[in-house]
Length: 604
Image (cartoon, rainbow, N blue to C red; front, side, top):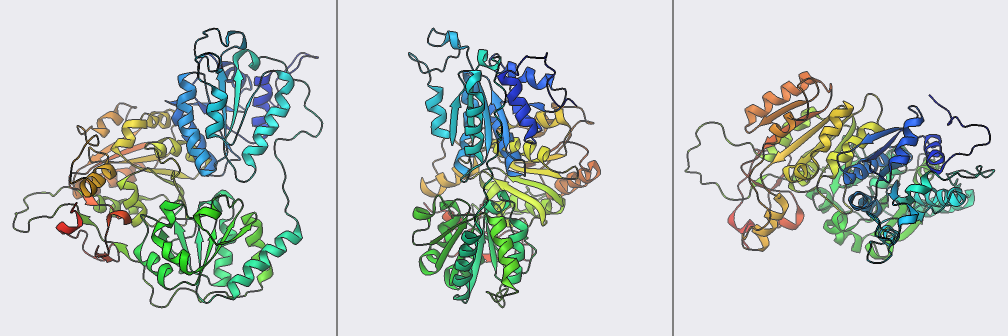
C-alpha cells in the first residue's frame, strides 16, 4: 500500500494526486463512476496510488451517484462519485439530486473540457459560454455547494469549502468541477493546519439547556410518543435513542424513511407511520398520544400526512441536528437543534432512570391493512391447478430470508409500499429508501454502495419492481463484477404498478403510458455471468417460490443473486391515499392471506 505518491524532490502534487490523497486520508475506499476523456486523469491518479483507493466502474453515471448515496447512508464518512463532461455529467446529476433532497453527504467530481477549448465549440463544453449548458448553474441548483477549480493555486481553499459544507448540518452533496488540464496542474504545499473536516463541539451549557427543555416537555405529558426517523441512523444515534426510550419507557414509532430506526421486536415499538404505515400506529397517535417527539425527522408529507390530526392536537417537539423543514412541515412545534448522539447519550446519563412514559399502551396490538385484490373475484369460478402468486404471499415468504445483518433497500412503487408495510426486519438490518426525488432504480445501485460500506459479515437485499429493473438493472452486473453478497428481488407485474393504481382510481381505469410487454428478468440476469458468478431464479406460484427460496438458502450469499417474482394478480397496495376507512385491518400472518376488495374501493 502506498502512503503517498512518489515524487521527485521538489516536484509538487497535481490536483488529481492531491485530491486522491485527501480522499484516502478521509477513509474513503471507493469512488463510483464511469470513465471518459475529461475524468481519466483522476482515474489515472487513483490507479497510481496502488490500491489505497479503488474505482468502481458503474454501468451508468446515475447508478454511480446512487451507489455513493447508498454508501453514505450506511456509515461511510461520505460517498464519492465522478463522471466525465457532457452526457456523463447530466446522468450523474440524477443521483446527486436525490442526495441533495435528503441531505446525504456525497462528493461529486465532474471532469470538464480543457480550459483552452471553452467557448470555442469544444466537444461537451458546459462552460455556459454561447449556447452551452452552464455547469456551475446546474450544479448550484441540485447540490449544497459547488466549486469550479480553475488553478492549482486555489485547490486547497476550494476543496476545504466543499468538504466542510458537505458535512455541516444540514448535510448534502458537494461538487467539484475540474477541467481536464487543471487535473494536471501542480498544487502548492498543503497549508499548515489544513483539514477537510470541521470539528463542531457543542457547548456544554447549550446541550444542558436543550436537555432540560426536552425533559421539561416530557415530564408535563402523560402519553408521549417518540417518532424516530432516518436522521437517527445518519447521525450514529440509534443506540443512544433506543437506550433513552427504554429508560424513559416512551413508546416509539418509526417512519418509512427508516422503518428499522428502532428495533421492530422491542415491546415499545408501535409500528411505522407514513403513507404505507400501520393503521394502528396512526390511530394511536391521532387519538391517544398527547406529546410527539420527532427525532431525526421532520415528517415530510409522505411521512406525516396520516398523522396530521396528531400534529394539530398534540404538543410537538422536533429534535434534529438541522431542523430545516420544521417551520412549514410542523408549524408551531418546539424546535431543538443538537447533535442527536450526544444529546440522547447525555439524557440517558443525567436522567437517573426517570420515566416519562408508561411503556407499551395496555392491550395495544399492531395492525396492518389486510391484502386485498384490486378487482373482485367471482366465488363461483372454479380454481384449477396452481394459482398465480400474489405479492403479499411473496412478501410473507421473503420475510424468512431477510439477512440478520446488513442492509435492506427498498425501491419506489407498490412493491415498496407493501414490503415496508408487512416486513419486520431483524434489529441489525438497516433499512433504506429514497423518498426525496423518489426515482425508480435507486435501490439496485444503492445496494452496491451499502454492501461495500458494510462489515465483512453484512449482506444486502434489494426489493424493487420490473420498472426499476428496466431503468437500472444493469447495475446488477456491477455486483457480479465485484462478487458481493447482494440479493435483488424483482416483483414483475409488467407495469408501473402505482401509476396503474392511480389511473384505476382517479381516471376511470384509463391506463396510459404505464404498461408494457412483460420482460423475463431471469433471462436477462442469466446473461450477467456464469452460474458460479450469480444465482438466478424465477417463480410464478407459491410452490415455485418456496422451491427457489430453498435454492437461495443453499446458495448462502456466495455472491450476487437475482430472484424474479412474477405477479399476474394485482393487490391494492397498503397505501393510505388509496384506502378508505372501511379497508380491512388485522394482524398480518394471523388472518387469511387475501381479502376481496369490494367494488366501492376501486370506484372512480
